[in-house]
Length: 224
Image 1 (cartoon, rainbow, N blue to C red):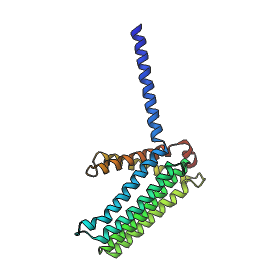
Image 2: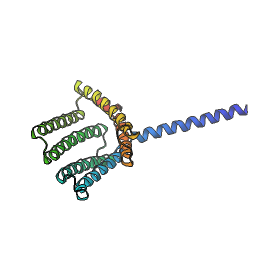
Image 3: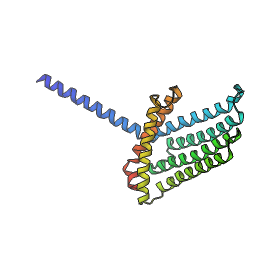
Image 4: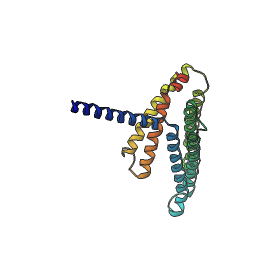
């Protein structure tokens, strides 16, 4: 009798601990502050990487100063955009779930344009072919503008077939990005380092949050 009672108490305690841990984990992953902090860290890494790129030619005379300076400036600008987006999410300045999602997609579009243009400029500075780089710039701008356009459709207050298609596309993209981030952490894509691991973890947190956000009833009600 006593053994059965103890077994029930033990099972109940274990189940309660499991439920609490699961709920705490979901609360952590779905908390905008979590994604905000992850974006703040990624933004800082991007800025530090940009500064390092600008500083590299001063310590290594064999590399092109123009190339690394242009790449570095582009990285700093993109890092600042990511940082301030993370700050606004963390502080609750962007608080509505659908707006957090839309702003995230918009940032991706803007970064695609800026990163693409600065990459093209850097390659031109070291003598790359003008025609091919002009094509690359046009492609970067077009892709970025499409992403920005999609972001405006997310929270325009209209629920259309286009919104449902966008929801499915975002679901697929976020899942793929999550898989890439996981592979990054385990060393499947790049040699492991502390920065690579932290960046991978931040990306995992961001894309899990975005998936949870995308599947939220409030967001789905506005898009599907």
